[in-house]
Image 1: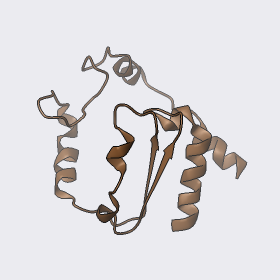
Image 2: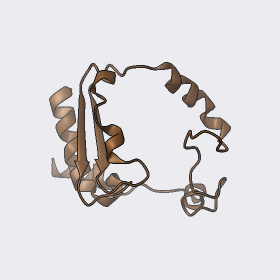
Image 3: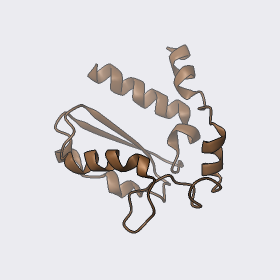
Length: 122
């Protein structure tokens, strides 16, 4: 169990292109490859994903949403009341004192949430 938590909590290795993108020096100057917002330039590699997402109305598998309470990019309120779109189940966890990157800011809590979700649904 502890080794599983360590594996899930290990920080990801980033390649140079990703580091440049995160630093705002990559393909677009705001650090995102694509945010799917109207009027913004898009990375064409994500067009197929955007099309598929626009065609899906519900997700039938049990879904866990982990979000930071201090996420000002995607406000926590945006993940409230979405149960109807997840007929297989929707569990939402908002972690206090954490921002937009809960997996980096609170890896142990995220790992515990993911493992609990798997135990309950697999």
